[in-house]
Length: 300
Ligand code: PRT
Ligand code: ZN
Image (tube, rainbow, N blue to C red; front, side):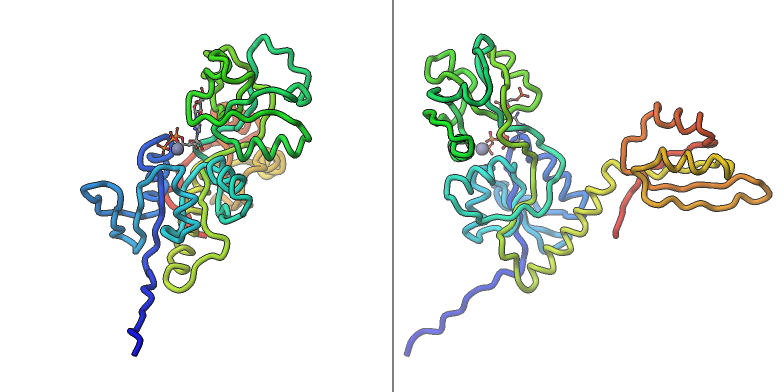
């Protein structure tokens, strides 16, 4: 008689985040804001979820796409650059980007030495290009019909031209300070990147699907209120149309009558930055008693 084989189905959701690096703190902050709490383990590689059945795996960012593809974790918080590089290398789409998270912004760019006579993308032909993103670079070269040699390096890409290893580079850029310090200038952008929520294309079943839905709803709430403010003010009826035009980033405002007055009171949820300049413009257009309040939580 053959032994009974039972397939263990995980009913807890597992999220992989970067253990230490640029994305680790903002990823934890986001999940904390979505109401997750964990019991930290001694080795700090696995954190057991306390408030919800959602556990954390703390890993190197480059391992996250593979962990998702192998089903070891369900969701990952990782740079789009890492996700798309692994797809480009395997020539398969094994992940979907569920949400862009608004942190870890950078771009994958071609950069050339300052003295390089850049005449457009055709100038790349015949060059040696140093990069840690050979998959994305090869895709870009193919798309542009350019023949060039890719020199794959795991780090310190920016010094490759000075060391004679390459003529130009293809690397991540955020402030641009590293390029400037190495006498390089950016000339073309291959990819705009930021941290994303990545998952397998087929989604999940059972308890994990419900947990993933709940988490996504909460994360949407967190992302939505990040730059949102509640704006309160009063104005005369005649000033209202002009004021509403100045609040194009607001959800439909509530307008109510003020007791014993010909003034109206407005309440608007605004999603853009509420700067002093903007408040002064509103005041000039007739808004009085302006109040800007932070939003604590939002659930659509
Ligand atoms: O150990 P582990 O493998 O997990 O970490 P890592 O060293 O591979 O990654 P880490 O923490 O450096 O970056 C994680 C993710 O942050 C990246 O995959 C990107 O999605 C995102 N990110 C955002 C950046 C940058 N900005 C960035 N500026 N990643 C790297 N850089 C590097 C870039 O490679 C270059 O060396 O910073 C330098 C350029 O910065 P500027 O500001 O001088 O232009
Ligand atoms: Zn890495």
